[in-house]
Image (tube, rainbow, N blue to C red; front, side, top):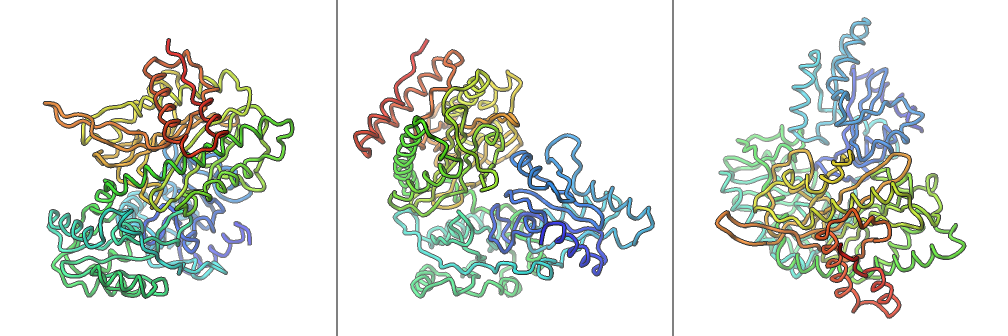
Length: 605
């Protein structure tokens, strides 16, 4: 059935349940950014498949909120449906509560059902904090009430995928750097600092990290559906036990972890015997939160902070993974340039180059798959920040203009994320200017030295100052943490305009990915992964800097060198020399010659 038919079935259920509206978030019971197919309810009801967004349906209208990464894609995917696109973060866009207040107040004034002021959301797939905020906002917007105990998809989604039961695998300590029981000891120490006796861990990547286990329940993310309950004496993993081999069960027993069924987590919370329990209301879903019968310590989970500072083994793994990923990228870029140089290039499309790059990565040792769906956007498609080519949108590449290629891989010893914008032939002066502004922002951030403990919001302006001077900007974040064979988006550290209080410390990873996007024309983004390392200690404290982890040449052909400072040119030359020195021993003669050519230094002024 199409989206409009699905809305009809939903509204029939809403009428039976006497509801004025239903809200569909993008998350699952674990507040995940990317979810298993079973929980793609917002996508099913709206047709929009971006990773972030909220669909809201009333008896007579529908709207979808999403952020700037998806404005163009969402507008296209919502065509032909009832949905109105709401551009989150843009002046004039109402909040969900404000919009519902207007919609349902109108319904009431038209003497429709009085019970139309009741709004519903499935409390098991939205965090406790989000529900609490929504309750307060709805109350302010005309006295609307919120119901949280209904999952309409269990009744109307015919053929809904089941919760995955893929096997769980061990992540060896040689890559993790610490055993599971050492990590659990660290977690308990962090809990004692918060005066908490235990905690419920709901985030899937936190559980995988803590137990040195990996899975494949979520596309591109090596995690498994589960909960982890920690107290002073034991640790319980709530999971479908079909996923666990005898060897994994034995491993968990040795690490001090007992196993219970996934659906018993609510009972586990009722049986929890300690005086209090730490609950992160931004992580634990509302349904489970309401089952707590002990005193709750409402604090952020300590696990993201522990996970963010990489061990020496993890850092070494990142360096090895970057070499292998760099080799795959060089092989791809050499092949790509040679193909674009041939008279007949019509066989090359956005999808075919994505498949070629994936095949070259798959040849590398310890490859475990892509870390996210490749973004290959040619010309105007490059302006769609999270564009993913389909058979309907796939276009041939021509020997002109720009291709934005954002890709990454999962290796067992590290996760990669890299963007290169590539000139396929002649470029316009506008493209050259925009490309150079983005490169300047990338280099300025990469060169930065800053105090230990600075937040990403304090660093963000360095990547934007030159484009701001030209009246340009981008609305997505400038950088995010990256997991060690885990999720490609990892917190708590971020670099972005919006305030994020998480502090930077040595050992944290971060991406450096400024961009500029001109709708209907082209987009430019240049991205490397960075490692935060010590810089110096002075009377003013400890200072940090960034070490670039990614090893891959940056296309110099679209650069307007006159726009670069000498410091920026030196950084680029030094980076390219390092790329050549590290990667060349792993390349054949032809690849080495190609890499030497494209890493030739630019001349300073």
